[in-house]
Structures are given as structure tokens and as C-alpha cells.
Amino acid sequence: MRQVKKGKKINKKKKTQNIKKQQIQKASQPLGDNNQCKSEEDQSEIENYEVSFLDSGDGYDNICDFGLEIQEYDDHKGAIGHFNIAISIDPNQSYAYYLKSVSLEKLNFLEKALVNINIALAIDPQDEDSLQLKSEILEKINYQGKSLKEKAKLSAKILKKGLDFMDQNQFQEAIQQFDKLIKINCHNFQAYIEKGNALFYLLDFDQALSCAQKAIDIDPIQDSAYTLKGIALSEIGNNNEAINSFQKAININPKSSEAHYHLGCALNKAEIYDQANQHLERALEINPDSPLFYLKKGNNLFCLRSYEKSIACYKKAIALNPGQDLLEKLIFGKGKSLYRINQYEESLKCFENVVQQNPSNDEAYFEIGVVLQHLNGFNKSLDFFKKALSLKPYNEEYQNHIDYVLEHQKLTQKPQIRSRKSKQKEGCKKISKYISKR
Image (cartoon, one colour):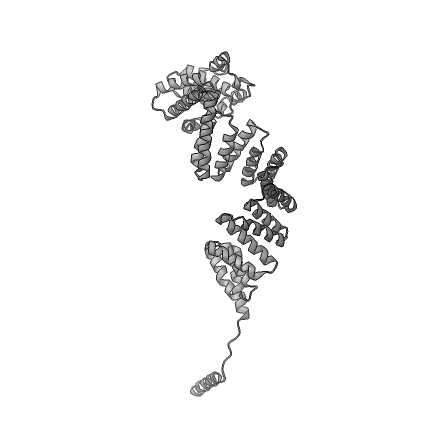
């Protein structure tokens, strides 16, 4: 939407990087509660504010660039001060009016924002960004004109629509609904949380983290925001910070199964298996019907070499009738634990079951090969190692096992025993050759 406008100015900004950096730093300092003023007098003061250290000699484009940079720090009074100077330099260009409207809309000075965006559109009626901004301003004005009951009803309807899209895995559509809620009320905690969840499923972890932080800024005593923040941090590789975030969520709500579960996963990743087990157990105490929790606890017990206990976890999870993907992981984990306690035939059944469910599971083919080496099927294992490698080429472990089996076959191959008749024939041939030479 507005990125097009910003994109137009990025190249110009590079040209003016060394111009008046000190002015930008000064103007981008926090201005106390000015951005939150609501009275008509305060609104007029901010709308007409002009920074004193700029003059027309700085140029229209440069001043807009400075103001845009300050706007990105959420210092909207300082930004408006720049845009007003730019307007005084050239009132026939639409860009400064547009940028000023952006800041006024952010400050919730909607009527004044509408006046300025109308001026921008009078200058450039086809500008898509200005048209979009005007639509948003009118939507907010319309919403604010409703009664509290009507507002609550409309917000609930939009939220439900977004959650329905989430249930259907239509995450982009869900985000559009949550953005509507945020435009209506930029302090809507749940809108940021749900948008962050949708972004997480789209693997946009940085933006999910941003949503989590905004939710925390709105309400710092909600465990769900810290849990979302921890999940995003874990995915971008900041595991230690993730652990701290999950711990904060648990401090706020000790009965949050999600926070205990994710903290257990983060501790497992850090190879702190004993503590991980404690939190995974706590998660299951709070929510004993989660196959996923049992899977992660089973995997962690495997790391602790408690193979019988891990098998028990996998069995409990399978009994809960999980989805196909989760069931495959549970059977695979069970097979690995059975192998470790030398129950090779049962282990083999598990891996064959996985292959039957998912013929493209390279790890299952590899494990079948490993198990066969303990069931007098050493030569048969070669086919499964080759199948695993065909599904995942260049896997060093798979190739090493293939090389090992081939080398073993060479060493164990019996030398060919020749019969007495063949030896006699060979002797006769040598004699006849000798005679002919003579």
C-alpha cells in the first residue's frame, strides 16, 4: 500500500544521507505524550507545527525524506513539522500532504487527516496510495461514529472471520482480517496475537516476532504474547532468548500448557534434557490429551536413554488417534526406541509401517537397513540404504552405510574352487603350447 511511496524516495534518501544528520537525530527524540493528545487545541498545535531548524533551502524532497525517516520512529509531531515546511515550499505537490495524512491518521486525528488526504487527491486524483489511505480513514471515521455496542459487534465479526480463515489454513486471508481490526483499534491485543500466529504458519518469523512485541507493548501481563515471542525467537535461532520468553510466560501463568511445552522443546534443543522433561511432564499434566506433547516428551526421553519410558509415551499418543503426519512421527520414534533395547523385529515392523504410510520417508528406509543388519539380512540392507539415498541424494550417512556393506561383501566373498578336470585341461593346454614352441 504505502510501500510504493516509500520506495520512490529511497533512492533520493541515499543522495541526502550526509545532509543534516544532526537535525534528524534531534527531531527523532521522543516528544513525551504529544502523540497521544486528543483535544482540539492540541490537535491544531500538532497539525500546524513546524520545525525551527529547517528552511526552504533544504529542498522539498530532502525535507520529505527527513520527515519520513522521523515518521518511522513514530514521532509524528516531528514528522508533521517537516511535512508542513515541505508544503510551504511547494503546495502544489501531493507527497507531503499524503505523508502528513499518514501521521495524522496514526495520531487518530481523523478529520484533519481526511482534509489533507483530500488535498493530496485534488492534486493527484489517481494516486493509489492516497486513495487507499482515504478509504482507511473513512472506515475508521465510520467505525468511531458507531455506538460501543455496534463497535464490539463489528470487531467480533471481523475477528471470527479471521479465525475461520485460520482454521482453513488460509493465513493470508486471515491476516487481512486481523489488519482490519488493527486499523480500527491499533491497541487490539488479540489482533496482533492472531496475526503473529498466522505469520508464523507462513514461516515469516521476523514479522511474527514483531507482532508479539507489539502485543507485549499493549499488555505486558499476557502469557500468550511471551509464548508467541519465544516461538518466533526459537525459529530464528535465538534459543536462549526464547527460553527467557517462555519462562516469563510461565511466571505470568504457571498453568499455560503451551508455555511449558515450548520451554521443554527449547531446553531439549539446548540439550538440557532433565529440565526439558520436567516442563514437558507439566504440559501433559495440564493437557493430558495432546499427542504432540507425548511425542516431544518421548523424543526427550529417548535423548535421556530412557527407551522404555519413551515407548510408553509414543503408545499413549497413538491411542489418542492423532493425525497422519503426527502418527508417522510417533511410529518412527517408537521404532527407534525399540531398536535401542534390541527388539529388532518389533522395531522393523514400525519402520515398515512408516514406509507403508509414507513411501517417500528416506529415514524409515535407512532404519530398515540398519535393523536388517541385526536380523541376518546384511546383504538385504543394501537395497534399503540405496533407496534412502535415492530419496535424499548426497546424504553422507546413507552413502557410508552403502560403502560399508559393499566392502563387507568383498571381504566375505568365498574364493572360487576349480574342479580337478578344469585343472587337467589347463595343464594340457600349457604342455601343448610348450610343445608347439619347441
